[in-house]
Image (cartoon, rainbow, N blue to C red; front, side):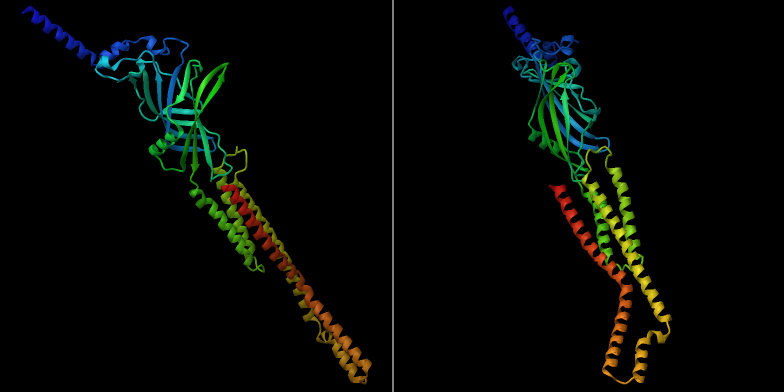
Length: 424
């Protein structure tokens, strides 16, 4: 009877101990995480200090909230997944009823210090994750979502048909490459695809790709490991085409069409000046779009400045043509007044005198030839008077036609070369 009670007691104790090993509490006590141990929270989790700690990271871009060309910065929302190996948090799942993963407070373990080098302002986009995941192989995993504003050197030469590449460099400010090694979890294609699927905004910028590269930084003689993410984004230019490029092009077309307006009045000059003032207003809008620190002149600036200069030259040509035509009309009016104010006998003097003289003189061959010569000279002199006042008008029209063709050829050649430079 006593033997039966002994066997029952041993079986009961074994079941209780097995049940206790199936709890997370037993696992935490086994790993020594139930008390605030400085060895677990402050020191690298390695038995030998010469063994480097391997850190694996992933970075996903979930939205692009703002791109500031003037400040040369980009604001994004990113999710960073970080995992590392700890030699102090390994266990056999068979000893704990198959438990291979557990969640604990992050204050209970050592966490690698990883900073973003280009960061201007970093905040938690959501509530900070307070937990980490422990895996039986000694891997610790955690993730956080950040609202990041980082510096980004931009090339605006092809604005608004531009693509920008911004880097996010992850590096430990304390540990050298002998202590901490940083590697990516996934490859570039997986990160790009995952980021596009998780993308939450449909704004001005489109995410093209995320590339990963390794690097090293020399800090006071110490080599530190780096993981560099290059984020390539492209601007959607439709808005700028509608509100800026097309209006400037329409003004240029109207300026070309203004050559068919009659130059005798002042309507043509007034129309051209109005177009020139409209272009100057759009240049003020361009000033607010582009930064003043650009290393090279953007193509959109060249586009506006050249069109503004060509239209300004067109205005000067119109002023010159109007001056020539006014001078021609003034000369014609003076000659007309002189011809009408003269007595009728002076206008017809040569022919009348010849006629009178023929009445008195006999019809000899010499007299007839002399009469023909006098009349021919009178007609030639009259034609010369008529052509002289019209010469300035003819010169003005020739200049206007030549300038029109040169203007048209210049504009077409410029637009073709600009189009090639923009989209090459």
